[in-house]
Image 1 (cartoon, rainbow, N blue to C red):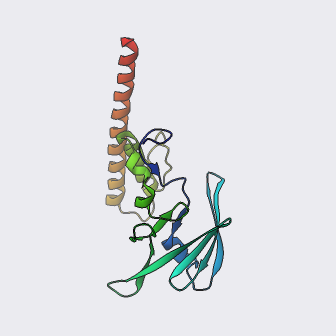
Image 2: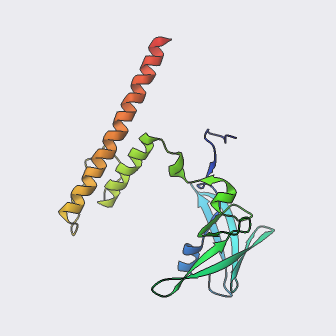
Image 3: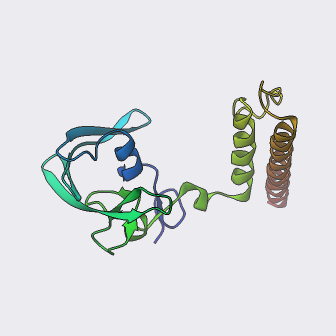
Length: 188
């Protein structure tokens, strides 16, 4: 079944998400801690959650609703451990849980935004990413930024070539789209 705006599955953007890596970096997983997480998208509040950490579980409360999420640990090859959420629906490990009640991306039936991109949009994203890596803005009309101090010339040249190639792909697809729409209009 299609979703509003076309396409098949809903995307991960716009959903409440809980990332165990972010929680760990910011001290939310320390045993006994109880803190709040506010998640907004484009200035709109999606969720105001209270997170309480236990030894191997988190209690997540949004409004009057409460959900417990188990935490699994895996040993790392060079020492240390990695923490994972356990999805209540399928039992798999996941770094990020979505929605409420919380479950993994697969169980929620969500797609990453890049999975729904057209080839043209993918080219634009790659060109913007290459420009950002050399300190430029995402504006494709602006000249390509100069080489940043400390960046090897070979690295700069690689980013420049990637940006040019991605821009060419996107522009050729845009030109084809415009030509097709002009043909359709003439045919009417």
